[in-house]
Image (cartoon, rainbow, N blue to C red; front, side, top):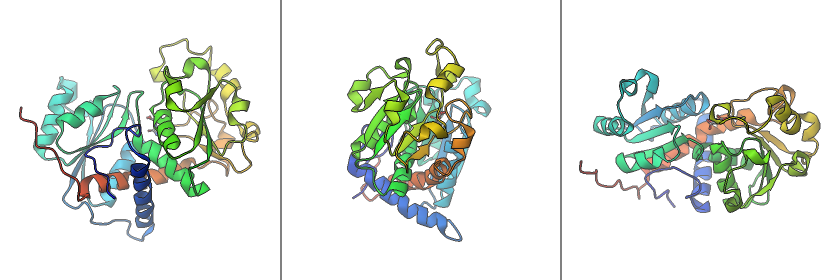
Length: 316
Ligand code: NCD
């Protein structure tokens, strides 16, 4: 089986088979990364560009490390140092990257849907590295890989995703991916931080932390996205931390062997105590390590698949 698609934009539109293929391929990539020389020539001669319109530490570095481990050539565009500050539109930027001959465009953008649009303009593969409040598919996959690595399966796992779900593309990708693979997902947080059409996502919802994490196998904490808040959605950070902040005491409400996860960056002392973040229950740094393997898998599957047929270039 192959990933018979040009782009990876959202887990919502991927099948369970496609998701499993990505995870299985990522397992092989993890083996590559354990070799003394963690590099293979699979993508030699392929050109990959990262275009990030929002800050990022993990995701951009991890995509770059992944592309380099497969021997692709990587160019990074930091939007603050590009012609974008001179007023170039996204469309013109993408046309230029196409003209330079890039094979893959890894893109982060504050507007949900921007990568969908880019995928129609760009002839090569587009990988969504996070678009607004929509999706972050490579994060969803690395979270699935981390759960599978530690628990042996996804099917039947109970996962509580806690916090600012409304503004979280991570929560959306996780919920789509986990439910497609048979996990039970619970969204836990104040009703003002729930997405509008939450009932369509096949998840359970509760504003009660204790009820939400009762017996779960995975406690997944989210950062409060202060940069996306319109204001007034909860009274204060301190109150939020008191009601929904995770710590070692509260972790006892979950299953005895429950994992603690977080996509990063952590706001220590708000959604998560430092002590719990650094405890043996935490697999946060495994998530980061798995991110490289998952992104290698995505680049490999998109850029080398025998079924991979790029559409004819758009006539301008
Ligand atoms: C997340 C993001 O940017 O969507 N971080 C990440 O990519 N690991 C989550 C966040 O910013 O809180």
